[in-house]
Length: 350
Ligand code: 5AD
Ligand code: FES
Image (tube, rainbow, N blue to C red; front, side, top):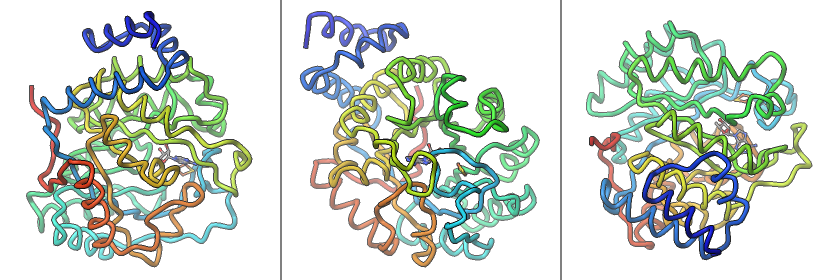
């Protein structure tokens, strides 16, 4: 760690912010010693609000049908070799029941932008889960929708919404998405979600094609100003049926470094150690927790469709039953001295 790196690290720890050029410098000049220094500070910050608790969110992948064509994503509409599925309301409710039976108090409904899930359909599912499990938080991750749609889903009882911004640089955004998608609409969605009272999550991939340290610095500056309650980051992992098939995967080390930096910018943020991180390294999720993450997301999808929700190659946890996934994660978390907790794990109050 050079004296300059030390100065930037200390200022980040103290002020919870740096200027965009300084984030870029911190990232570009990082070494193992800086990473350790920031991870220790991140762990200390997290401890103030959450102790050694790691929150569990049961992930239900409701559909791999998608009207979008994101260049990085394995379930993009142009992928003709993807066997499509969608879960019915009854199947989704059964997964949620199973999650609750296994101790989960948050379920995340995630899917491609599948037109089948109209507001009426999703509102019915959300109400169904809430009626049966009033103490359970419902998180939606269903992509871009209208403000009116987000309003109705919120009214039906949805508590949280995850919509990764993917990159805070408009030009980079357009290198990752087809022309009909726009950076401005993505940002509009995030603002609407926030204003409608959702606990809101943004996030991005680390090492996505064309990404530079300057882009990552912009992501950090965006997070600093947006102040999300949740933030999902994981390494980019190529999928063989996409235009980015031949691109290199993102780095586990840089992902962990960024988890520490994000924890220091937003000390109370709910930060998952993602499945993509677990895919790129056998102990990826443990490394994420040790860098400052505090959420894990065991898969609750029906085992017979899991392989089909293939956003990227070699995704882990596609053969395990829900109970197995939870048991496996609990053991991994315990082994590194943390404890899985099953309360709702809402954003900590001031
Ligand atoms: N590698 C890693 N993450 C991906 N996602 C989509 N495709 C990939 C990929 N190839 C992430 C996106 C999306 C989230 C649901 O999954 O960031 O927002
Ligand atoms: Fe569907 Fe990206 S192509 S989420």
